[in-house]
Length: 295
Image (tube, rainbow, N blue to C red):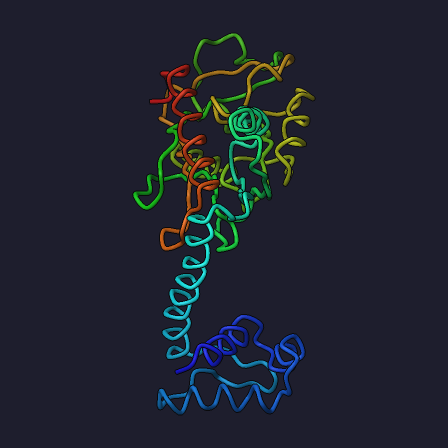
């Protein structure tokens, strides 16, 4: 097997379109098809289920794809580690934010004070729980503990109520007492939506969600209208932005979420990525010290 064969194979597996791949690689489509066919002949098995111009990986092709990912990651790691040793690595870190976005400005500000020469590529999503290979680091939240990634914070969820709500004067509330209220939630694919439904079901009711938002900032603005209730993370969502609301601990059920830092375990981390990862870890350790109720 040749690297060029494997590279062409990976492109077809990704695009599922022979014509498009041939055009992007500036080669004739028959040449591309013959290269894939030679690989299949070497392995003595077809790797795609062919549907016209849209070949899809079969179970054998999926095995080849898995090993190819390791091969090309290793090749990229070779280049990155040598460049790092020579001191010529590009000092840019890609960071995907899926949780705790309100902390991002301060987190990056404090990092920039220590590492002014490192640049960032930031992407944000509340409804994508995947970890793309092109991102060096991903900050995400989970309903359950996960031993595969670095645990930054175990965070309690609290109820947010309008100041005129009948339960606003209570020191603690029961989640089940909100079963007849209207809720605000993030997008149905978000972690916060999943948490809301999970804990409400633990109390034997489905939340009546009145408003949705796919943007955490818009979500916070909707909260300030003081019309509906919500469950929010106690630490990573700043409490001082809710002047017309009250925040109440939940006493009838333990509501938590876990915040993790993810990186590709088989991908080489250059100095810039390591520095940002360590800063994020240290930053959350400081938050935990200031908020002992998180443990």
